Length: 173
Image 1: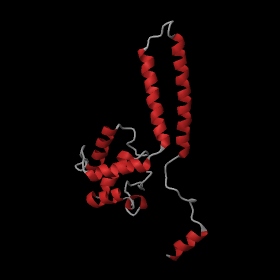
Image 2: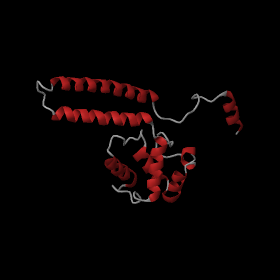
Image 3: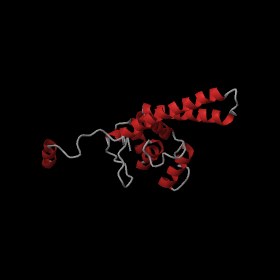
Image 4: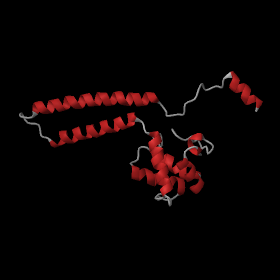
C-alpha cells in the first residue's frame, strides 16, 4: 500500500509514521481499532486489491471481507468520512487525475462515434474525429507508461541493505 504499511498477513503497522502522525487516522484507530483504518485503506488506496470494483461494490466487498457483513456499522461515522477524505487527499497524484480525464474523453468520443451514422456529408468530419481519438489513445498510453514506471507506490527508502553505520547502530541496540 502507498500511505500505510500493510504486511503480507494484512495487518497495518500501527507504529507507522504514516498512520499515527495523521490526526484523522489516529482518531479512527483509537475509536474503532485497526480494522477501521484497514477498511479505509482498502477502499481508498490506489494499490488496493479491491481497486477494480466501483466504489459501491468496493465498499461492500471490503466490509464483508473484514467484518463479515456487507455494510460496516461505522461506515457513516464522521471519523470514517474524515479518514477517507484525508486518505484521498494525501494520496492524490496528478497522473491518475489526468488518466481519469483521458478515459472520460475517450468515453465521450466512443459515444459520439456510436450515435452518429456515417454519411457522405459527414465522412470527412468523422475521419478527423477518428484521427483525434488515435492521438488521445497514444497520449493516454504514454501516461499509462509513466504511471507504470512510477512502479509500486512505496515509501522512500535507501538501498535494500543497511549501510555500515546502520548495521553498527542496529547491532548496538
